[in-house]
Length: 250
Image 1 (tube, rainbow, N blue to C red):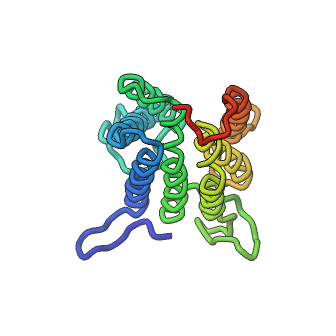
Image 2: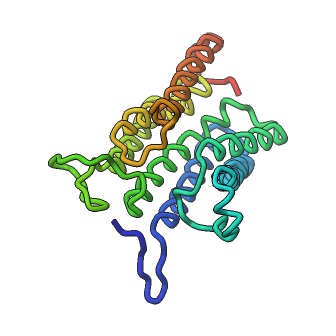
């Protein structure tokens, strides 16, 4: 693991730095897709940043509310760069809500705008996996396998590597099939693939958050997202008007 990158006297935390690179790459890809889909690239980029920033704030505040006593003692913990102190459900809820409101204000077509954001989502998934690999977060359960990773005094499943490979596979699927189907399919393909990968990889994680009854939180959410994505794929496909030409619904 490489939690810090030493640049002369400056010690740069590799986890947040990797995520920043992922954000930059994601925005670049989203702007390219916006151009291809004949959308306003500035509006698409601003929508992505609005959702991301609102999601980060919401994720930190959601985690802080769940651990309110600790943050009342140390309020400066709210500006920590510790990636483990974010609530993913709260961040997703607030980030998606903020992006949706911005998109409505700018009158961006929903499905095509989602398609423009699809490669950005794939890039962020890969960046998150690299970030966790560098920092040691998202570690796997103990296992002695030829490809096990020695981390936190144990040989473990390299779940960060699993997640990175899954992100690359999902991105490859989007590149191959996600740009030529009906509007919205590219985004749903990335979401469904990422959710399926989460359900699979979470079974090998050693730091999973658990619900009552021992269910893994990320697996439950992943199954719900996967099911919703598949339903939307079917509905949006059936609602697509028949045409022999290129995709025109915007």
